Image 1 (cartoon, helix red, strand yellow):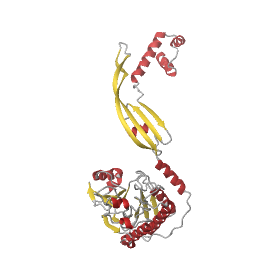
Image 2: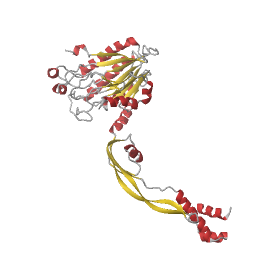
Image 3: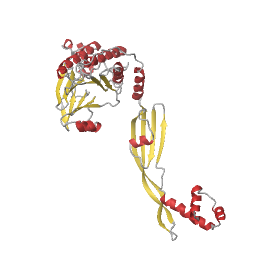
Length: 442
Protein backbone atom coordinates (compact mmCIF):
# COMPACT_ATOMS: atom_id res chain seq x y z
CA UNK A 1 0.00 0.00 0.00
CA UNK A 2 1.55 3.33 -1.05
CA UNK A 3 1.45 6.53 1.01
CA UNK A 4 -1.68 7.99 -0.64
CA UNK A 5 -3.60 4.76 -0.14
CA UNK A 6 -2.48 4.70 3.50
CA UNK A 7 -3.80 8.26 4.00
CA UNK A 8 -7.17 7.37 2.41
CA UNK A 9 -7.39 4.18 4.49
CA UNK A 10 -6.74 6.18 7.67
CA UNK A 11 -9.39 8.72 6.61
CA UNK A 12 -11.96 6.01 5.92
CA UNK A 13 -11.28 4.42 9.31
CA UNK A 14 -11.49 7.78 11.13
CA UNK A 15 -12.33 11.01 9.21
CA UNK A 16 -11.08 13.00 12.23
CA UNK A 17 -7.62 11.33 12.40
CA UNK A 18 -4.58 13.42 13.53
CA UNK A 19 -2.79 14.38 10.30
CA UNK A 20 0.37 15.65 12.01
CA UNK A 21 0.77 12.46 14.02
CA UNK A 22 0.20 10.42 10.85
CA UNK A 23 2.95 12.40 9.04
CA UNK A 24 5.45 11.76 11.86
CA UNK A 25 4.65 8.04 11.96
CA UNK A 26 5.00 7.68 8.18
CA UNK A 27 7.94 10.14 7.80
CA UNK A 28 6.14 12.35 5.27
CA UNK A 29 5.07 15.97 4.89
CA UNK A 30 2.04 16.99 6.92
CA UNK A 31 1.01 19.35 4.08
CA UNK A 32 0.85 16.39 1.68
CA UNK A 33 -1.38 14.48 4.07
CA UNK A 34 -3.64 17.54 4.30
CA UNK A 35 -3.91 17.91 0.48
CA UNK A 36 -4.92 14.27 0.03
CA UNK A 37 -7.36 14.60 2.92
CA UNK A 38 -8.92 17.84 1.54
CA UNK A 39 -9.30 16.53 -2.00
CA UNK A 40 -11.10 13.42 -0.73
CA UNK A 41 -13.52 15.46 1.36
CA UNK A 42 -14.35 17.72 -1.59
CA UNK A 43 -14.85 14.73 -3.88
CA UNK A 44 -17.36 13.34 -1.41
CA UNK A 45 -19.08 16.72 -1.19
CA UNK A 46 -19.53 16.80 -4.98
CA UNK A 47 -20.85 13.24 -5.16
CA UNK A 48 -23.16 13.82 -2.20
CA UNK A 49 -26.70 14.69 -3.27
CA UNK A 50 -27.99 17.57 -1.22
CA UNK A 51 -30.61 16.18 1.15
CA UNK A 52 -33.28 18.46 2.48
CA UNK A 53 -35.55 17.75 5.42
CA UNK A 54 -38.42 17.66 2.92
CA UNK A 55 -41.17 16.13 5.09
CA UNK A 56 -42.29 16.69 8.66
CA UNK A 57 -45.31 15.03 10.23
CA UNK A 58 -47.16 16.39 13.22
CA UNK A 59 -50.18 14.75 14.79
CA UNK A 60 -52.69 15.28 17.57
CA UNK A 61 -54.53 12.12 18.62
CA UNK A 62 -57.42 11.89 21.04
CA UNK A 63 -59.77 9.05 21.95
CA UNK A 64 -61.83 8.91 18.75
CA UNK A 65 -60.17 11.50 16.52
CA UNK A 66 -56.76 12.25 15.09
CA UNK A 67 -55.36 15.28 13.24
CA UNK A 68 -52.32 14.95 10.95
CA UNK A 69 -50.35 17.78 9.36
CA UNK A 70 -47.90 16.72 6.64
CA UNK A 71 -45.53 19.57 5.73
CA UNK A 72 -43.52 18.46 2.68
CA UNK A 73 -41.72 19.49 -0.50
CA UNK A 74 -42.68 16.25 -2.24
CA UNK A 75 -45.92 14.91 -0.70
CA UNK A 76 -49.01 16.59 -2.12
CA UNK A 77 -51.76 13.92 -2.07
CA UNK A 78 -53.96 12.48 0.66
CA UNK A 79 -52.81 8.93 -0.07
CA UNK A 80 -49.11 9.78 0.18
CA UNK A 81 -49.65 11.78 3.37
CA UNK A 82 -51.46 8.87 5.04
CA UNK A 83 -48.66 6.53 3.96
CA UNK A 84 -45.94 8.89 5.25
CA UNK A 85 -47.76 9.23 8.57
CA UNK A 86 -48.16 5.44 8.76
CA UNK A 87 -51.90 5.64 9.45
CA UNK A 88 -53.63 2.32 10.08
CA UNK A 89 -56.64 2.61 7.78
CA UNK A 90 -58.22 -0.43 9.38
CA UNK A 91 -58.46 1.61 12.57
CA UNK A 92 -59.08 5.11 11.15
CA UNK A 93 -61.21 6.64 8.40
CA UNK A 94 -60.79 10.03 6.74
CA UNK A 95 -63.42 12.52 7.85
CA UNK A 96 -62.06 15.46 5.77
CA UNK A 97 -58.80 16.83 4.45
CA UNK A 98 -57.28 19.96 2.89
CA UNK A 99 -54.29 20.46 0.58
CA UNK A 100 -52.51 23.82 0.15
CA UNK A 101 -49.05 25.05 -0.81
CA UNK A 102 -46.67 27.97 -0.24
CA UNK A 103 -43.31 29.00 -1.72
CA UNK A 104 -40.07 28.44 0.20
CA UNK A 105 -36.49 29.38 -0.84
CA UNK A 106 -33.41 27.50 0.44
CA UNK A 107 -29.65 27.63 -0.24
CA UNK A 108 -28.15 24.53 -1.82
CA UNK A 109 -24.50 23.62 -2.27
CA UNK A 110 -23.61 23.46 -5.96
CA UNK A 111 -20.41 22.27 -7.71
CA UNK A 112 -19.60 24.91 -10.33
CA UNK A 113 -16.02 24.15 -11.41
CA UNK A 114 -12.53 23.01 -10.28
CA UNK A 115 -9.56 25.17 -9.32
CA UNK A 116 -6.07 24.98 -10.92
CA UNK A 117 -5.18 21.93 -8.82
CA UNK A 118 -8.37 20.14 -9.88
CA UNK A 119 -10.04 20.63 -6.52
CA UNK A 120 -13.84 21.20 -6.77
CA UNK A 121 -15.19 24.68 -6.07
CA UNK A 122 -18.42 24.59 -4.04
CA UNK A 123 -20.85 27.54 -3.90
CA UNK A 124 -24.24 28.13 -2.25
CA UNK A 125 -27.15 29.03 -4.53
CA UNK A 126 -30.79 29.78 -3.59
CA UNK A 127 -33.58 27.56 -4.99
CA UNK A 128 -37.36 27.97 -4.65
CA UNK A 129 -39.66 25.03 -3.90
CA UNK A 130 -43.40 24.50 -3.43
CA UNK A 131 -43.98 23.64 0.21
CA UNK A 132 -47.10 21.46 0.50
CA UNK A 133 -49.42 21.28 3.50
CA UNK A 134 -51.70 18.22 3.67
CA UNK A 135 -54.01 18.35 6.68
CA UNK A 136 -56.12 15.30 7.50
CA UNK A 137 -58.86 14.90 10.11
CA UNK A 138 -59.48 11.26 11.00
CA UNK A 139 -62.18 9.48 12.96
CA UNK A 140 -62.07 6.10 14.59
CA UNK A 141 -63.36 3.43 12.23
CA UNK A 142 -66.23 2.22 14.38
CA UNK A 143 -67.38 -0.20 11.70
CA UNK A 144 -64.03 -1.96 11.93
CA UNK A 145 -64.38 -2.36 15.68
CA UNK A 146 -67.94 -3.59 15.22
CA UNK A 147 -66.65 -6.04 12.62
CA UNK A 148 -64.05 -7.41 15.03
CA UNK A 149 -66.64 -7.67 17.80
CA UNK A 150 -69.03 -9.53 15.50
CA UNK A 151 -66.33 -12.02 14.49
CA UNK A 152 -65.48 -12.65 18.13
CA UNK A 153 -69.15 -13.06 19.03
CA UNK A 154 -69.88 -15.43 16.16
CA UNK A 155 -66.93 -17.63 17.08
CA UNK A 156 -68.74 -18.45 20.34
CA UNK A 157 -72.07 -19.36 18.75
CA UNK A 158 -73.16 -22.99 19.04
CA UNK A 159 -73.62 -25.04 15.90
CA UNK A 160 -77.23 -24.95 14.71
CA UNK A 161 -78.71 -28.05 13.07
CA UNK A 162 -79.49 -27.80 9.38
CA UNK A 163 -80.20 -30.19 6.55
CA UNK A 164 -77.33 -32.38 5.41
CA UNK A 165 -78.74 -33.28 1.98
CA UNK A 166 -76.97 -32.47 -1.25
CA UNK A 167 -78.61 -29.94 -3.59
CA UNK A 168 -80.37 -31.94 -6.27
CA UNK A 169 -78.42 -30.20 -9.06
CA UNK A 170 -75.00 -30.42 -7.45
CA UNK A 171 -72.41 -31.40 -10.05
CA UNK A 172 -74.68 -30.85 -13.07
CA UNK A 173 -73.34 -28.48 -15.72
CA UNK A 174 -76.31 -26.60 -17.16
CA UNK A 175 -74.41 -23.40 -17.93
CA UNK A 176 -76.91 -21.36 -15.90
CA UNK A 177 -76.51 -19.40 -12.66
CA UNK A 178 -79.32 -17.80 -10.66
CA UNK A 179 -79.55 -14.60 -8.60
CA UNK A 180 -81.92 -14.34 -5.65
CA UNK A 181 -82.29 -10.59 -5.10
CA UNK A 182 -85.08 -10.06 -2.58
CA UNK A 183 -83.99 -6.65 -1.36
CA UNK A 184 -85.28 -3.63 0.57
CA UNK A 185 -87.32 -5.89 2.83
CA UNK A 186 -86.98 -3.39 5.71
CA UNK A 187 -87.74 -6.03 8.33
CA UNK A 188 -89.01 -4.20 11.38
CA UNK A 189 -90.83 -1.47 9.44
CA UNK A 190 -94.30 -0.72 10.77
CA UNK A 191 -97.17 0.54 8.62
CA UNK A 192 -100.87 0.86 9.48
CA UNK A 193 -103.23 -0.02 6.65
CA UNK A 194 -105.89 2.46 7.77
CA UNK A 195 -103.31 5.22 7.33
CA UNK A 196 -101.32 4.18 4.25
CA UNK A 197 -103.42 1.49 2.54
CA UNK A 198 -101.60 -1.68 3.62
CA UNK A 199 -100.38 -3.13 6.91
CA UNK A 200 -96.75 -4.12 7.37
CA UNK A 201 -95.09 -5.70 10.39
CA UNK A 202 -92.67 -8.54 11.15
CA UNK A 203 -95.25 -11.29 10.56
CA UNK A 204 -96.28 -9.89 7.19
CA UNK A 205 -92.64 -9.27 6.24
CA UNK A 206 -91.79 -12.89 7.12
CA UNK A 207 -94.65 -14.23 4.99
CA UNK A 208 -93.74 -11.99 2.05
CA UNK A 209 -90.02 -12.78 2.15
CA UNK A 210 -90.43 -16.56 2.32
CA UNK A 211 -93.24 -16.50 -0.25
CA UNK A 212 -91.03 -14.62 -2.72
CA UNK A 213 -88.20 -17.08 -2.05
CA UNK A 214 -90.40 -20.08 -2.83
CA UNK A 215 -91.99 -18.49 -5.88
CA UNK A 216 -88.70 -17.40 -7.42
CA UNK A 217 -87.15 -20.83 -6.75
CA UNK A 218 -90.07 -22.44 -8.59
CA UNK A 219 -89.39 -20.15 -11.57
CA UNK A 220 -85.65 -20.78 -11.66
CA UNK A 221 -85.62 -24.50 -10.86
CA UNK A 222 -86.36 -25.72 -14.44
CA UNK A 223 -83.09 -24.07 -15.55
CA UNK A 224 -81.09 -26.33 -13.19
CA UNK A 225 -78.77 -23.51 -12.08
CA UNK A 226 -75.25 -24.53 -11.06
CA UNK A 227 -75.18 -21.88 -8.33
CA UNK A 228 -77.48 -19.34 -6.71
CA UNK A 229 -76.04 -15.94 -5.81
CA UNK A 230 -78.03 -14.84 -2.77
CA UNK A 231 -77.88 -11.08 -2.12
CA UNK A 232 -77.93 -10.36 1.61
CA UNK A 233 -78.34 -6.87 3.02
CA UNK A 234 -79.62 -4.06 0.80
CA UNK A 235 -81.75 -2.73 3.69
CA UNK A 236 -82.75 -6.16 4.92
CA UNK A 237 -83.52 -4.56 8.30
CA UNK A 238 -85.36 -1.28 8.69
CA UNK A 239 -83.67 -0.38 12.01
CA UNK A 240 -80.62 -1.59 13.90
CA UNK A 241 -80.85 0.45 17.12
CA UNK A 242 -83.34 1.10 19.91
CA UNK A 243 -83.78 4.72 18.82
CA UNK A 244 -85.28 3.57 15.48
CA UNK A 245 -83.02 5.95 13.58
CA UNK A 246 -81.05 5.50 10.37
CA UNK A 247 -77.34 4.87 11.12
CA UNK A 248 -75.94 7.92 9.30
CA UNK A 249 -78.77 10.41 8.78
CA UNK A 250 -80.39 9.92 12.17
CA UNK A 251 -83.88 10.00 10.63
CA UNK A 252 -86.63 8.71 12.93
CA UNK A 253 -88.44 5.72 11.39
CA UNK A 254 -91.81 4.03 11.82
CA UNK A 255 -90.80 0.67 13.24
CA UNK A 256 -91.60 -2.12 15.60
CA UNK A 257 -89.77 -1.00 18.74
CA UNK A 258 -89.02 -4.55 19.93
CA UNK A 259 -85.50 -4.76 18.53
CA UNK A 260 -84.63 -8.22 19.97
CA UNK A 261 -87.76 -9.64 18.32
CA UNK A 262 -86.82 -8.04 14.99
CA UNK A 263 -83.35 -9.58 15.18
CA UNK A 264 -84.66 -13.02 16.17
CA UNK A 265 -87.24 -13.08 13.38
CA UNK A 266 -84.82 -11.70 10.80
CA UNK A 267 -82.31 -14.48 11.52
CA UNK A 268 -85.09 -17.06 11.21
CA UNK A 269 -86.30 -15.61 7.90
CA UNK A 270 -82.84 -15.45 6.31
CA UNK A 271 -81.71 -18.93 7.41
CA UNK A 272 -84.95 -20.50 6.17
CA UNK A 273 -84.72 -18.66 2.86
CA UNK A 274 -81.11 -19.73 2.24
CA UNK A 275 -81.89 -23.32 3.23
CA UNK A 276 -84.69 -23.36 0.65
CA UNK A 277 -82.29 -22.06 -2.01
CA UNK A 278 -79.79 -24.75 -1.01
CA UNK A 279 -82.33 -27.42 -2.01
CA UNK A 280 -82.06 -26.20 -5.62
CA UNK A 281 -78.33 -25.47 -5.99
CA UNK A 282 -75.19 -24.55 -4.04
CA UNK A 283 -75.50 -21.02 -2.65
CA UNK A 284 -73.04 -18.14 -2.41
CA UNK A 285 -74.31 -15.46 -0.03
CA UNK A 286 -73.04 -12.01 -1.03
CA UNK A 287 -73.16 -9.25 1.58
CA UNK A 288 -74.10 -5.82 0.18
CA UNK A 289 -75.18 -3.39 2.94
CA UNK A 290 -77.81 -0.69 2.53
CA UNK A 291 -78.18 2.64 4.28
CA UNK A 292 -80.50 1.25 6.98
CA UNK A 293 -78.59 -1.95 7.82
CA UNK A 294 -74.88 -1.08 7.61
CA UNK A 295 -74.06 -2.99 10.80
CA UNK A 296 -77.06 -5.31 11.13
CA UNK A 297 -76.55 -6.81 7.68
CA UNK A 298 -72.89 -7.40 8.57
CA UNK A 299 -73.66 -9.36 11.71
CA UNK A 300 -76.41 -11.18 9.79
CA UNK A 301 -73.82 -12.27 7.22
CA UNK A 302 -71.59 -13.56 10.02
CA UNK A 303 -74.52 -15.44 11.59
CA UNK A 304 -75.18 -17.09 8.22
CA UNK A 305 -71.50 -17.91 7.84
CA UNK A 306 -71.39 -19.57 11.27
CA UNK A 307 -74.66 -21.42 10.75
CA UNK A 308 -73.41 -23.00 7.52
CA UNK A 309 -69.71 -23.14 8.43
CA UNK A 310 -69.58 -26.94 8.01
CA UNK A 311 -71.75 -26.99 4.89
CA UNK A 312 -69.72 -27.21 1.69
CA UNK A 313 -72.70 -26.03 -0.37
CA UNK A 314 -73.17 -22.62 1.27
CA UNK A 315 -70.41 -20.00 1.13
CA UNK A 316 -70.56 -16.40 2.40
CA UNK A 317 -68.69 -13.40 0.99
CA UNK A 318 -67.79 -11.29 4.03
CA UNK A 319 -65.29 -9.03 2.28
CA UNK A 320 -65.58 -5.42 3.58
CA UNK A 321 -66.18 -3.78 0.18
CA UNK A 322 -69.74 -2.47 -0.03
CA UNK A 323 -69.83 -3.18 -3.76
CA UNK A 324 -69.50 -6.71 -5.09
CA UNK A 325 -69.49 -8.32 -8.53
CA UNK A 326 -69.46 -11.79 -10.04
CA UNK A 327 -68.40 -13.04 -13.46
CA UNK A 328 -70.41 -15.95 -14.85
CA UNK A 329 -68.92 -16.98 -18.15
CA UNK A 330 -69.01 -13.75 -20.14
CA UNK A 331 -71.61 -12.05 -17.93
CA UNK A 332 -70.53 -9.54 -15.28
CA UNK A 333 -73.04 -8.49 -12.61
CA UNK A 334 -72.26 -5.87 -9.97
CA UNK A 335 -74.31 -5.08 -6.86
CA UNK A 336 -74.47 -1.86 -4.87
CA UNK A 337 -77.21 -0.31 -2.77
CA UNK A 338 -77.68 2.93 -4.71
CA UNK A 339 -76.24 4.58 -7.80
CA UNK A 340 -75.15 7.98 -6.55
CA UNK A 341 -74.58 10.60 -9.25
CA UNK A 342 -74.44 10.14 -13.01
CA UNK A 343 -74.95 6.78 -14.70
CA UNK A 344 -71.83 7.41 -16.82
CA UNK A 345 -69.71 7.25 -13.68
CA UNK A 346 -71.10 3.86 -12.73
CA UNK A 347 -70.43 2.37 -16.15
CA UNK A 348 -66.82 3.37 -15.67
CA UNK A 349 -66.81 2.17 -12.03
CA UNK A 350 -67.66 -1.41 -13.03
CA UNK A 351 -64.58 -1.50 -15.24
CA UNK A 352 -62.31 0.21 -12.68
CA UNK A 353 -63.42 -1.75 -9.63
CA UNK A 354 -63.36 -5.15 -11.34
CA UNK A 355 -60.83 -4.87 -14.21
CA UNK A 356 -60.10 -8.59 -14.61
CA UNK A 357 -63.78 -9.52 -14.65
CA UNK A 358 -64.51 -6.66 -17.04
CA UNK A 359 -61.83 -7.92 -19.44
CA UNK A 360 -63.33 -11.42 -19.44
CA UNK A 361 -66.92 -10.21 -19.97
CA UNK A 362 -68.68 -9.34 -23.24
CA UNK A 363 -70.22 -6.07 -24.36
CA UNK A 364 -73.92 -6.25 -23.56
CA UNK A 365 -73.35 -8.77 -20.78
CA UNK A 366 -72.54 -6.23 -18.05
CA UNK A 367 -74.86 -4.65 -15.52
CA UNK A 368 -75.27 -3.08 -12.09
CA UNK A 369 -78.15 -4.19 -9.87
CA UNK A 370 -79.01 -1.72 -7.12
CA UNK A 371 -81.61 -0.91 -4.51
CA UNK A 372 -83.77 2.09 -3.68
CA UNK A 373 -83.15 5.79 -3.65
CA UNK A 374 -85.19 8.23 -1.61
CA UNK A 375 -85.78 11.35 -3.65
CA UNK A 376 -88.68 12.94 -5.46
CA UNK A 377 -89.71 11.63 -8.83
CA UNK A 378 -88.42 8.10 -8.36
CA UNK A 379 -90.19 4.83 -7.77
CA UNK A 380 -88.80 1.61 -6.41
CA UNK A 381 -89.06 -0.14 -9.77
CA UNK A 382 -86.91 2.19 -11.87
CA UNK A 383 -86.77 1.93 -15.68
CA UNK A 384 -83.67 0.14 -16.89
CA UNK A 385 -80.92 2.48 -18.06
CA UNK A 386 -77.99 1.53 -20.30
CA UNK A 387 -74.80 3.60 -20.48
CA UNK A 388 -71.41 2.72 -21.89
CA UNK A 389 -72.57 -0.81 -22.60
CA UNK A 390 -73.51 -1.30 -18.93
CA UNK A 391 -77.13 -1.85 -17.92
CA UNK A 392 -78.22 -0.22 -14.64
CA UNK A 393 -81.14 -2.09 -13.15
CA UNK A 394 -83.01 -0.84 -10.10
CA UNK A 395 -84.54 -3.83 -8.35
CA UNK A 396 -88.02 -4.09 -6.92
CA UNK A 397 -88.34 -3.43 -3.18
CA UNK A 398 -90.13 -5.99 -1.02
CA UNK A 399 -91.45 -3.58 1.62
CA UNK A 400 -94.61 -1.51 1.04
CA UNK A 401 -94.89 2.19 1.83
CA UNK A 402 -95.06 3.64 5.33
CA UNK A 403 -96.41 6.97 6.58
CA UNK A 404 -93.37 8.92 5.34
CA UNK A 405 -93.75 7.58 1.79
CA UNK A 406 -97.50 8.23 1.88
CA UNK A 407 -97.09 11.83 3.05
CA UNK A 408 -94.50 12.52 0.34
CA UNK A 409 -96.63 10.91 -2.41
CA UNK A 410 -94.27 7.97 -3.02
CA UNK A 411 -97.25 5.65 -3.36
CA UNK A 412 -96.85 4.00 -6.76
CA UNK A 413 -94.40 1.26 -5.83
CA UNK A 414 -95.57 -2.37 -6.09
CA UNK A 415 -93.83 -4.57 -3.48
CA UNK A 416 -92.03 -7.67 -4.70
CA UNK A 417 -88.82 -9.65 -4.90
CA UNK A 418 -86.81 -10.42 -8.02
CA UNK A 419 -84.67 -13.29 -9.30
CA UNK A 420 -82.58 -13.73 -12.45
CA UNK A 421 -81.13 -16.45 -14.65
CA UNK A 422 -77.93 -15.89 -16.62
CA UNK A 423 -76.10 -18.17 -19.03
CA UNK A 424 -72.34 -18.44 -19.40
CA UNK A 425 -72.36 -17.39 -23.06
CA UNK A 426 -75.84 -15.96 -23.68
CA UNK A 427 -75.89 -13.42 -20.85
CA UNK A 428 -79.02 -12.58 -18.82
CA UNK A 429 -81.86 -14.73 -20.15
CA UNK A 430 -84.64 -14.44 -17.57
CA UNK A 431 -85.98 -12.08 -14.92
CA UNK A 432 -88.68 -13.19 -12.47
CA UNK A 433 -90.67 -11.11 -10.00
CA UNK A 434 -92.84 -12.44 -7.22
CA UNK A 435 -95.36 -9.84 -6.06
CA UNK A 436 -95.47 -10.80 -2.34
CA UNK A 437 -97.87 -13.15 -0.56
CA UNK A 438 -101.37 -12.99 -2.09
CA UNK A 439 -103.02 -12.91 1.37
CA UNK A 440 -101.42 -9.52 2.02
CA UNK A 441 -102.53 -7.85 -1.21
CA UNK A 442 -105.81 -5.93 -1.05
